[in-house]
Length: 476
View 1 (cartoon, one colour):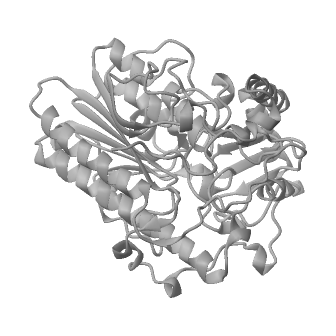
View 2 (view 1 turned 90 degrees about the horizontal axis):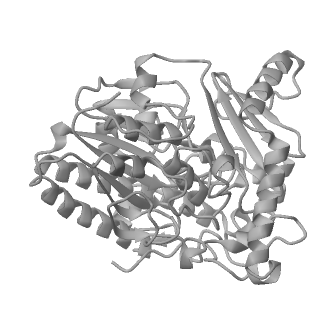
């Protein structure tokens, strides 16, 4: 449905859906996001189309599944093809600009923005090429901790970059208030993405003794799914902590970065109100994917558990009645919402739908949401399908997982082999097959990655290409 006025889209990085106080987190303090949610719709079951940065953002930009656009991993960034929501707005003459992290290929690409202010793109225009080596015999096994060598209080290039993005946005909103035409502004923030370095004032809010225990941690005897075990063996993460207190400090820093993010969003909302545009602007907040934060001994993202694949999603603005919506949705629906907000059009088939249309129907237990992963550490493709209370995780070449998220929201009991769930499992596999053939999709991903690696000179050359961990931000 077409909406009046401007549109502000805020996308953070690696913010798990549960790390909101309004979502019931027992520890995290997010008063500004709570305030935004209180005057809008919070979608309680929102997902990323891929739980890693670059393909998630390419899918969001285009409004299409990762296997459709064939941008599989962090070495295949979006370059403006296929055309996406930004192009649809440009076609309609809407002013559309970006400030902050995009994680696309290059500032020169026609990615759908009239202007890209201080954009953060993939490193050297190629991204994390070494992560595309996924077969067990050729994978790069890093000897440095993915989370960074230092964890604790301080300022990082990321916290400084986020402050610069917020400052630039404050100036942009002041200028926009002097112009008569409606606008769409995309703001990309990097917190709470690692490195897990955060100003002391935020870390002080999260004493280590207050932290809940790590869920299903291997140190307590839990065994991960074999696919996850193989993925974890390719990188240093939980096994790289010096001691348990450093592991707890890492979690505290993540939660503190969520509050740092929340403060920055508060600044954006204050600037929107101070410019006189709050009452004529719809605001969408979400993140590209979540973070495991030590659950199951996992950190970062890259799997299909709720901590990694679910994202926060809030829509607030004029004429939007406050409440929550439990219908499963994804970032592809955000893409379509942006197009529909301005009554724009875009050629091609896309699975997304306006979030406001979805919310207006009430809870829809039959709506299907899909995610996939073909990136760093994955020896085969992983596919997720959420429908109603059920969630299927299919690992190519491995046994699946099936969770009843109503009865078991923490995903502690795999019901895939339960005879009582045989009909549910078969129905979910039929829904999965209607979206893609997992085996053929797995083969296509490897073929495309092999071709890219060959183009760079083969596995040995590819193994040395790309940022070793977090992408460096631009100078600001």
